[in-house]
Length: 106
Image 1: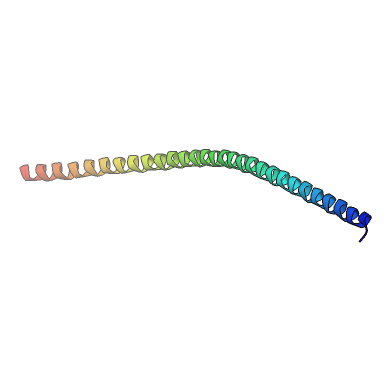
Image 2 (image 1 turned 120 degrees about the vertical axis):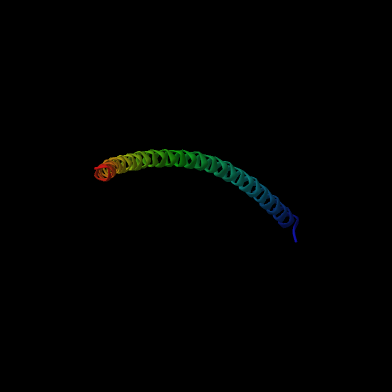
């Protein structure tokens, strides 16, 4: 082999090593960039998800409060109706007792 061929092979090998080192460096940069962007995206996603959860929870609280108010109003109405019926029955019972006493007293 001629000296020129050997030098040419040596130059080609050196160039190949340079290309390999450059590729490794770029790969490391790409990995670091991807990891940095991945962490940022993850943090952004967590923040957005937390905001969405907070919004959903607020909506659920509002609906729950409205439902509790509605059910409470219905229960109050039912209780008032029961009180009225109890009062009417109590008056009827009092009249029956008074009539019974009066008939016994005669």
